Image (cartoon, rainbow over all chains, first blue to last red; front, side, top):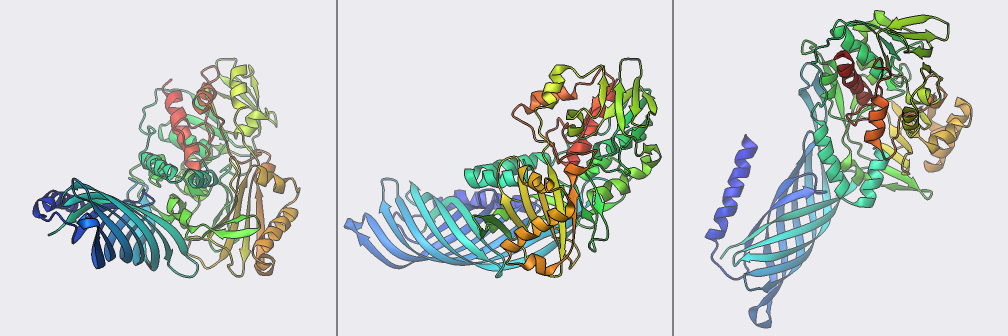
Amino acid sequence: MQRKRIIFSLILSLAVLPLMAQSSSPGKHLEVAYFGQFLVQPGLSISSSIDIQSWAITGGIAKRSLFVRPQFGYYFQANSHQSYLAKLAFGYAVQKRKRRGWAHQSLSLGIGYQLSAIQEGFSVSLADGSRSARNRVYTSGWMPSISYSQGVPIQPQLSGYYRLLIGQLFENTERTSATLFAEMGLRFYFK
Amino acid sequence: MNRSEFLKHSLTMGLGLPFLSSLLSACNDQSLFGTDFQPSFKGKVLIIGAGAAGITAGYILQKHNVDFQILEANTDFGGRVKRLDGFADFPIDLGGEWIHTDPAILSDLIADPSVQANVDIINYRPKTISIWRNNKLRRMNFASHFYREYKFKRSTWYGFFEQFMVPSIADKMEFEKVVTDIDYRGEQVRVTTEAGETYLADSVLVTVPIKMLQNEMINFEPAWPQEKRDALNTIDMPAGLKVFLSFSERFYPDILMESLTSGTEKTFYDAAFGKDTNDAVLGLFTVGEPAKRYTDLGSDELIIAAVLRELDTIFDGKASRFLQEAVVQNWSAEPYIQGSYSHYGSNFNSTMQILLEPLGNKVYFAGEALNEGGDTSTVHGAAESAYRVLEKMLAG
């Protein structure tokens, strides 16, 4: 029930945010996206980018920038784990003005910290098959990553984008694993 | 699909198959077989074989007050479900080990809300996975994201049947009864054993391994129709072997794979994964050609020596250095098993339908190879097949 409420609120905010945005130039923005590890472990990501340095080129129809992108992601696999990822990425972006708004591409390197609650076991009732006594353990680790994203304008203050992120999670010296996230969502520009 | 095949396809096809597999796994979360049927059958049923399917069939018949008897060729029940005690401080599955579906299946199989018991389950998701290829040990821990299997934490598949099904049918099981003939020409089916004992029943449920039927260890009178014989011979039941080695120190990953060839499997795995133990026990599970290379060696001692040589090569001699004890379960050498488990060819549905067709409406078939629900080659699939077949048999 709680999860449904959260999802409903997010959908509502997706509808309202474009109405609030007014600027027609690329500026500060907020990204809300589906965030899936290997596509099959679904989740949600919220991120933004802050320009450290930017250059307007070719008469203001394009902009290059160096940016820092804070990101918070959550993803899960039912009856297996829930994971939270906080990440900071540094990258290079190119944004171009199109008829309907701003298109963008970026490449970034990041470092994240992931915290996971893993369900290692449980009891199953022979009476009805229900699960109880779920045994959870918590793991955490650093995750350097590289990501590429591309976005296309939908409205002047709204673009759709996807981002692919490849990372290596270091939980301990024995347990390191490569991982791939696919992110698909919307970028809302603010004035 | 076994783990190796799954991983191979995952590696070669990218992300599509894991997604598909996840969907299929979700579909499996629902019980698809009936457990509450009302039998109209009046008569006696003879069950041949006391493996997962035979035990479950007896359990169902007992619940429905149908007269039955189980004949088992071996000295114990279980078939390819077998337990080893005393090797470590936890019981070891010498046969079927993993629960390849939602563990709620255990409740579905018991199908009795009055059974107030819980079974502790390991969410089997190995963390460290390596593959030995081209004489190099390579990590592939990312594959752990695609695992979705379960294991018993304190018990075993054998323990499950022993605790929850066998007590109600123990007095109906007869051991060391090697069935050699099934004659279904008359009104009743006549079953004869190697010792010359004869049993009569109104229906017979044959649950022996498919290899026993392929090798014609049981003579049917009249003989099987040619179509059924041809269908039977399209199923492969290759060699199968498990080896367990206990070590004074752990030096191996959770999973170490070698073979990724279709239809074969060779996996070393931490048998103590998720158990409440500090014992270091490494298991080897192998099926098909890799298993045959071991079973052809001829003795358990030679098999263990061969396994140790391989492990020493991979882990710089640590296997021999830390070895405490080893045990071999050679399923190919078991006279009433003779292999691992079924592998179907391309015509799964048509082959299954032909094989499930009863002989003379009196002789039925069940077992891990004969679950029309699709989960073949698994313990729960074998047990499930008993429900599916009995539902038809008892409906008359």
